[in-house]
Amino acid sequence: DWTMAEFRRTKIEEIREQVGDGKVICGLSGGVDSAVAAVLIHEAIGDQLTCVFVDHGLMRMNEAEQVVTLFRDHYNIPLVHVNAEEMFLGGLEGQTDPEKKRKFIGGAFIDLFEAEAKKIGGADFLAQGTLYPDVIESVSFTGGPSVTIKSHHNVGGLPERMNMKLVEPLRELFKDEVRELGRELGLPDIFVGRHPFPGPGLAIRIPGEVTKERCDILRKADAIYLEEIRNAGLYDAIWQAFAVLLPVKTVGVMGDGRTYDSVCGLRAVTSTDGMTADVYPFDSAFLSRVATRIINEVQGINRVVYDYTSKPPGTIEWE
Ligand code: XMP
Image (cartoon, rainbow, N blue to C red; front, side, top):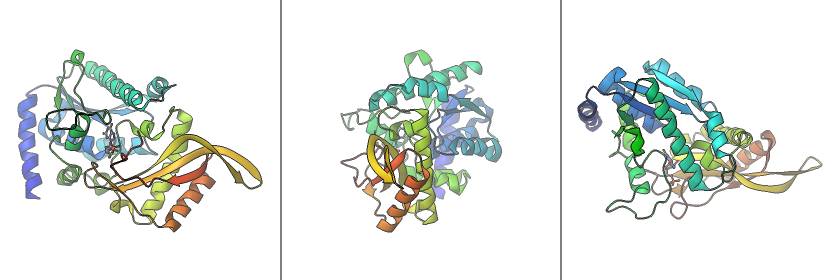
């Protein structure tokens, strides 16, 4: 595509100009945005870039391995893999307020990047895959909304103390354009076509307190849901589909016993940029199949509900 080829060339020049011979550190989240930003920046400045993948233990099933494999094997881009599950789950302990959860995770990311930057002798820039909708939804600026809906963890600048500038080459782009750019840069289709995944990960899909046990339960339910969606050939027709684990227990009956377990919510929406969204209209046979599988296969869930809220008035994520 001519436009994206042109965009790629222009951005590469801009990145070189901005960075000079400085060092850049880039956080990978597992999503398309940060992956595309990293590959683009690597093309511009090569090994002046260090990619850091912080595994906060809030990833979906097998996601961490997929990211590491893509960068190390497919692109041969050096990648630091930080296992920080304990730190994140420790910090989230007892935390139930959505904004406090988001702020803690955002802050912890910054701390870890800062530590990694020190290890490479200091970095001058922090690269992020911030998109246009991220910018307008979480920052109050002239012409934008004056209310913060959610603190997107990758937006909002850096603490003064970090003394690093931001490199955000995707700031003008919408999601579909980032995907186009990703294809232009040779990212595998399976990666480019992936549903968006938020930086704070499963923490914002577990309303209430986040624990390792609840993350494990949610990962299993989410994997079943997505497997059924792929098997039904619906994955690409959906903008985002995921399970949430509610802090609500209800009574059920299985075999001849009483159960008292958590409720799992299923969400699937269509959208072009994440700013507005419509509910995906699954047929009821599909939803029944998913519900039955989740309840039979996942210990800790005994009820499944489908979220029928569009955006607005709902948001896509539950927190
Ligand atoms: P909401 O829930 O605000 O989500 O309707 C809109 C889109 O943004 C994603 N999202 C995030 N992405 N960091 C991200 O990188 C975040 O903190 C974050 N919060 C939400 C969400 O998955 C949806 O695609």
